[in-house]
Length: 212
Image 1 (cartoon, rainbow, N blue to C red):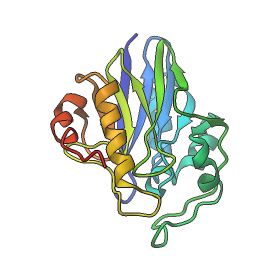
Image 2 (image 1 turned 180 degrees about the vertical axis):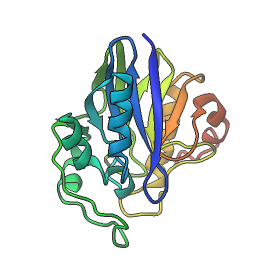
Image 3 (image 1 turned 120 degrees about the vertical axis):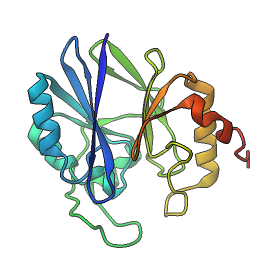
C-alpha cells in the first residue's frame, strides 16, 4: 500500500507536523500540531482527497500541541496520545518560561500505550513509548514499510533535550537503543524538527551511549 507523508514545519521553532496517508484508500492521520498549522494541513488533505481520521500527539511540549484543539475542531478527528499526556493536554502548564504562543486545553479521545497499534488504510503502525525527552513521549513505527514518526526522540545526529523538567538522559539512552534494536536500519525517521534521517545513519553514535 502506498504511503505518502507531507511535512509542515510550523510555529516559532519550526516544529514538524506530518500529514500521513495511504494513497490507495485516502485514509490520513496527522502527527503533532504546532501553532498555526491547521489551515495548511486541512487544505492539503482536501486538495488531495484524503480524509483525516486521527490526530496523534507524540508528546506534550508546547511546540507540538498548540494547534491540537484547532485541528480536532477543523477535522472532527479523535485526538490520541499516551495516557501520561492526558493531564498536560487538558491543563497546559509551562515547564519553564511562559508559553510563547497560546495553548488551548484539549481532551484526548484515545490512549496509545506501548505495544498498541494505529491502523491507516493498509498500514499498521506500532506504538512505542519512548521516554527521555518527555515522560509521555510516543513514536509510531511501521517496520514493514520502513517508516518511523519519531517526534523529538531522534534527530539527525542528535536527540531531544534532556535538561528540562520531566526529561531524563538515562531514559533517552534506553529509548534510542531500543530504536536501533527494533527498527530496521533502512527505516526512514521523520523527526519533530529538521530533515529526515535513517536508523542506520544514526546507529553509530547511538551505540556509543552509556548504559548507565
